[in-house]
Length: 380
Length: 256
Image (cartoon, rainbow over all chains, first blue to last red):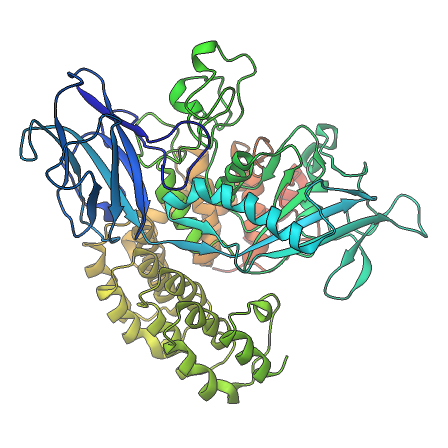
């Protein structure tokens, strides 16, 4: 294999340097409207109108060999840099623009050896997508006087901080053609207190009536949150294990928005979300932007990438899985050669898979197509 | 909220009025409908939220027109509203939409609505379309619509799905019953009330709270039959054998 493609940068996600789905030369099962293609190689997703960078790696070819990039359909994808007729620079960086999202019009970026018309020695298939924009409601939750650390009493600072957090999530999701809007983001403070007149019960401050009310189900009027600042889940509660979470994500729920509840602490989790349903998702203070982006993936109907056929998270530490945003959990004892998969030491990756490959757990691959479909109608 | 306030919010791209159910005075239609043609896609999308609350052909025409808006977010919202805002009078327009709209998500919504409307003339239109439909979800919508339209082949196929070897596929067939809602199939759902295979993970991410096929069956029947059971139903509940027997007895007493 003379060359291959990879992300243009290492370290944290960067909006214009998307993860490249370079798992195998096979292109996998193609979404019905992607058209057929003879290309073999990596795939990458791009939002229509965006210009992104990818990196060409020389694996088994002379460093001095001159290589040139071209697009097979410049009405769909254009090679912006290097300029036409100029060789790819030593750093391997190629800039490509997603011109238009067009059905059944597969396009390939081809790498030519020796001249711009030389033999093709490698291919990258970009997929261009129109941008789906989702409205957002960020809930900053206070439970028994313990706020999430993300809370700030100064409105301007709070907005700045929330915007910065969401923009980091967008750095991961924008190449998929999905974006959380920050321009009209709602920021809400949710407060939960102990019922002042009846022990053992909690109340929440209901925004619409500006008054304290009993909790919604499943905790309900007689229920309470266990611990200040914490959303507790307890396996001893059986199928009601997540009753505190289920109650939390109903509080001041805003229709027609993605509702994200920021809490100080979740029992053993950084983030929690149901898969493919219009219910809120939660992140703890220990959640990174990756965790938030991961939970958004669940909200958009994505399962864990390391599911096995029975739907359990398999004990699989293979590199290709560790690079995926929807990997379930960083392995506690990752061997050194798996410690850094390009996003930093001990950090799992941010690839939302473009390909749908055979052998991957049915439904867990082809994440770009799957999440975009859910993003078209997430509020029902 | 006064209609004038809603219109002002739309023009200011203020989404506040969409947070709760809002009554819109039908007399506001002449003022609202032009917003569907605004040059700003966000205003067009917001206008749909208001127009969706107005009865009548003009409002429905606005939604149908928005199905081919240039903006994907407008088309998505129009598709969503179409699923609950349709009329038999719109069938011919929807037939035209099905054969000419290049957005697979729109086509999926149109197909489902044609199935809900139930006009026999849709059968031939959908049959012809099915040959060229490339999108898997829209193709599934073809199947669901045709079941509702009483197409024998698709009805047999649906019955087979209820008896699939894979419990997850049996669950998917049960979930489709919420759309199909045809009592003819109740006799084939009853046996699933004894199906204790794991079928659906209903926990949040990381968790494994499983419903069996029989639990899903009870929940779907509860919704479709409008809550006929004496016992409490729940999204994460594993029903007892007695509760499932009671369910079967009630269902078997219902005429197809």
